[in-house]
Amino acid sequence: MTPSLCLIPGLAGTTFLLIRAEFRGKRRQIYVLKPLSTLIVIGAASLSFLLPERDATYTIGILVGFALSLVGDVALMFEEKRKGLLLGLGSFLAAHIAYAVTFGILGRASVWDPLSAALLAASAVGVYRMMRANLGTMRWPVLAYMVAISAMVSRAVSTLSSPAFHTGQAVMIAVGAVSFYASDVILALCRFWRPWRYRRISLAFYYAGQLLIALAASSFG
Image (tube, rainbow, N blue to C red; front, side, top):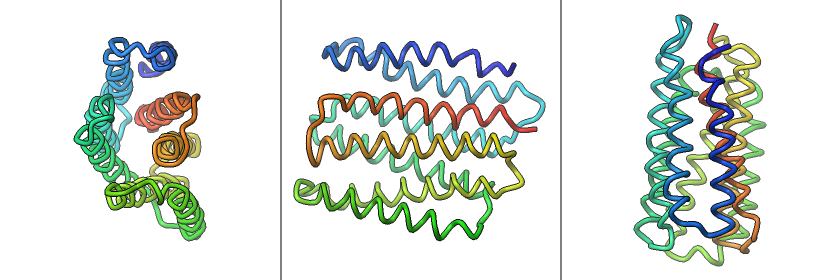
């Protein structure tokens, strides 16, 4: 068993406690549990350096993404302030660029790329139309973010055709990216379209997606 798998119960526990704290409005618990959960993900990826069979390009690339995500997590704990929202959005946009570049370097273009691009474009257009009336001055930052996360998912799917990854590993990356995407769509629609009392469930998608991407670093060979 790879060392990173030992961190799964810990992340499951902190994510559960975080979601419960979000529902109960326990701000102090949130301030601890949210960055702690992301640090566990960072730890899971970092443990791949202990293994003889690893790809430093992949691990370093996603660690850059995780570090930027950590900044975004902290910033979005203060999203009621415009500066916090913009910093969080910018940090996650940069994180998606880091993921997309990493997946793109190791992935491979295939005949499925046009299909995944078309599906992501259709999803982005649909989500944007629902949010458009309430975006205001956030229109361009949100559009830039949608392009970045769509590119990240597209490049994650490209790993399914790459000889650098075995099938299970590529599936983890692709499913992880889609889970991350689903989390962000839920949050975006709740903020700029209609509030949803159960929006905190997006955290389960977010951390599951991040963890799958992290675990893939220990699956080379």
